[in-house]
Image (cartoon, rainbow, N blue to C red; front, top):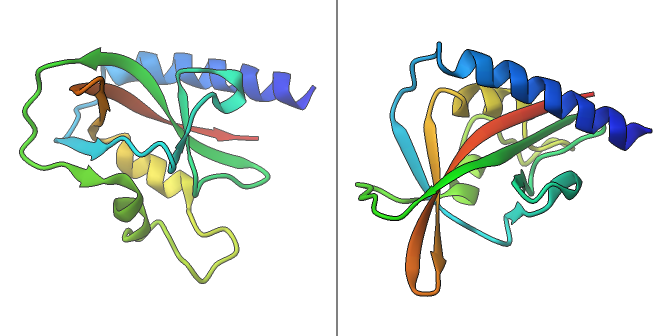
Length: 135
């Protein structure tokens, strides 16, 4: 029952964000290396959801949704996602719940985000959209 509720909540939040996506002005693009140890695949059995390891509490989850893949992009700077999040004001090592999922979501939703993955010696640039679920 809880899983169905979360999936239904994800669906409705995805629809609302898609509708508002075209109305928002994005800032710059951020490029991060795809870290398979930090990004967990198949979150809620959805292959296009990438759950951030530091995220998650009993009531909040921050994750990315894969939108599309590009082959030939030329970023000026490529960042480490884990280091970027852990060095931010949204992360506090001293707290039990170290990551403030909502504040991170509010920050990332203003950017176009790409995850760069090396696949068969070729780079894939995965366009992702930040998502937030609150139960």
